Image (cartoon, rainbow, N blue to C red; front, side, top):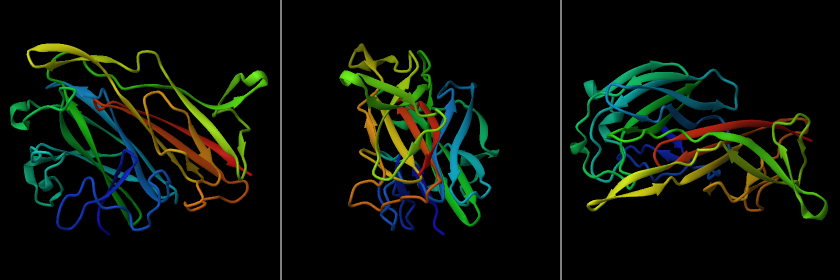
Length: 293
């Protein structure tokens, strides 16, 4: 079985001839938001912005709908990626040697940032950030997937913090069109075939931060941008990814007419995961379960 990379709502195959981090799709053409089998939906670092000699804890949101035990092997690759790439191809080679450092196995791992010559990485991204690749290789039975997470190297200034979910609501209309917000984690919530639920995430205060970047000879303030990825083991979404703190997204049973139905048996549980990312490497996620009848 070829290694796969699943992250950020994207499904990517590591092709035999090249590292295609933005190319090959699954041969099944399933939407990335549909979770079946082994998946790594996110990797989160706490903190997500690490200065030299400081440490962070890495956690993988790894799931397997077949219920098999999941093992995760963590590593960091210190090879500088080629210009315009996020990962050096030798990071995945069996003989990468000292350039790939094993961080241990398990659902999480600790990593201490070494001193890194950032000048070797060329220009920073638009937020002024430099990143090193963390690899989480997950295995369950005979299935394997490899998730790539870009860990931000703090080069001075305030540390970025992870965004934080507050809650996930089902939005309905009451008398006079007044919005009613029902937490999705309320007991007894049941979804039925042909239902369409409007969902709205909310975030803790301070979750969207401002930061300073250089623009020529001046320093300017910028505000983080957020992207939200939506996943489920059944049904489908009006949009697999939304941006900012809105708009709301609609969960459908079944999804659009041109997609597989993914309707479970009556009484089955449906898992929903929502992953939020800021544009500086911050991540948070929530998991909810509802019953289908």
